[in-house]
Length: 292
Image (cartoon, rainbow, N blue to C red; front, side, top):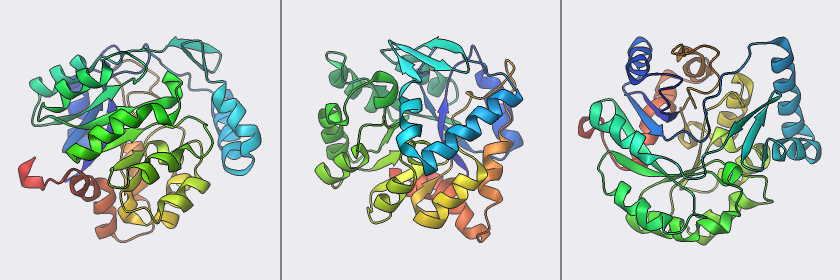
């Protein structure tokens, strides 16, 4: 079973029907949905954009003292700034959109319940979503919502108690990737986008943490970065994800094959690729293919 563990539902960019069409064409059985984090965002397919992306990746990997300030500058005063355009960040994620998608296509979609701990009563509201059997865990975004990792204490304690995973897009807060695993040792954690923005330091740390994983999602990554992450962590610590529909250039057109090929092109046995593409995620949420 192939499961995309990281995909946003935003029908202003990509309809649910088109998502399922793309999933079918690429053999993806299930997708785990997340509420949109920001307003509709299409990217320009230009040499300038690709060169900028490449330069950013080089700095993050090799000169983080220069790369991290650039990363920090992507979010300012409630807006996500990318390639000269600004997109409003949604302070309160709309989990009802995810719930509605799961209700319409329960055989194809699961959901992450997104939370912003800076919003009063957000944890109480979060509990109302994770009791829905279609929601398998919690999404947190310290980067876009601009908070310290310690603000997730109440959320992390809840997830640890219930035995459900949390997927996190980290900010550049120093050593923030160490805080939750060391404070909540039984908490199941996925660091999105291969652990951006720490990458190499985070991989070294995560390798020996039994409950901590990374996913392969986002145009922040490349096949080479995914390969490096798998080489360091091993195939049982990595989960397949796309981070769609972000990165697409036209309405209702998303190429699922690109991110999937990042995994399929790895120089590892096919049996190990199966773990990245789905088995690791199933083990993480304690389910078998027949139960889904």
